Image (cartoon, rainbow over all chains, first blue to last red; front, side, top):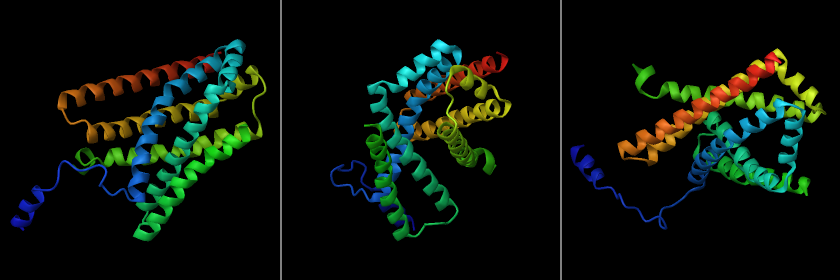
Length: 130
Length: 113
C-alpha cells in the first residue's frame, strides 16, 4: 500500500499538452467551464440592457437598436453556442447525478451529441437571422 | 460537518440555481415568442407584474450564485499562488455583489414607477 502511494507521487507533473488524450467527455467538461466563464462576462451586459430598456421609452428604443446591430447579433450567435452547450451539458450532469447515463458508452454518446448539438443551435439561428 | 466543509452546499446551490434558471428562461423565452411586448409601456408593465418582478429577482439571485460557485471552482483549480487566488476571488465577489445591487435597484425602481 505504502509502496503504491510512493509510486503515485512520481506521477508526471509536466504533461505534454500535445500528447494528452482528450476524450470526448473531457472536451465536454472543459467546454462547460469555458462557456460558463463566457456567460459570466455577459452578465453585466445583460443587466445594462435591462436597465436601459426599463428607464424610459427612449432607453427602450436604444436597447432594441443595440440588440439589432450586426456586431451584437454576431456576438449573440457565439453566445448562443455557449448558452446551448452550457445548458445541455448541465442537464447531462444533472442526469448523471441521478444515475442516468453513467455507463461509459452512454456517457460518451451523450457527450458527442451535446458537443455537436451545441454547435447546431447557433447555426440554425444564423440561418434564421440571415 | 459535511454541510460546511465538503463543498456539499456549493454543489447543491449550483444545481438548484441551474434548475431554477432553466425554468425561468423557458418561461421568459416562451413569453417573448408568444406575446412579445410591442412598446416600452407594455414591456415595463409586464416587468412590473408582481409575479414577474419576484421571479426575475430570484433569477438574478440564482444567476449570481451560480456564477460565484462556478468561477470560484475555476479559480481554485487553475490559480495556485494563494495571494493571487485571494485577490481574484475578492474581485469576483465584489463584482458579482455590485451587479446584484444594480439589478435590485433596477427592479425596485420598476416596481415603484
